[in-house]
Length: 168
Image (cartoon, rainbow, N blue to C red; front, side, top):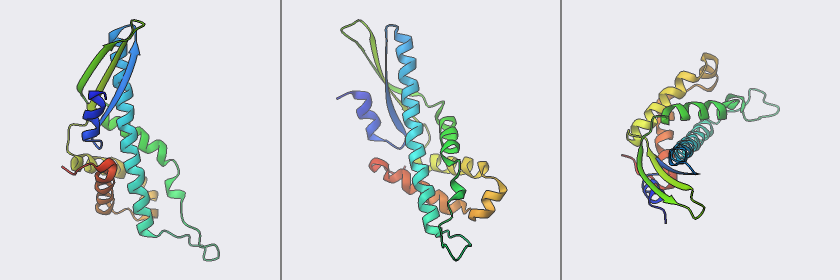
């Protein structure tokens, strides 16, 4: 198995691996770093989606229309784009903490890297909560009765559950 993948798997809430292949080593390295950061952003986005869903479910949001008793779902419109954007912003400076390189049979470089968010999972959850709260409009905050502490707890739980990550 690949050492960078193994290292990323040890702390999946803060690390991710990526691979890049190119004839130029620097280009392969850049591709691997982009891939790893995209994977880390995707993992964070999944944690936020889980926390958001759990928060909404716990609040049992129903429509004011008693005839339909439909769940209110409009507060999540655009959530995927919003989450993806700040997740990428949060981890864009995540440094490479492990790198392996191989020469392929066709003389290309195959570079594997592992990037890591440098703060603890709890600090990451707090930062995500802060950014998420700042991005909500006043109308959205009023509509969903945003509770920062509850959302923070949901984020910590989602990140802690993500592939068995531990809270540190």
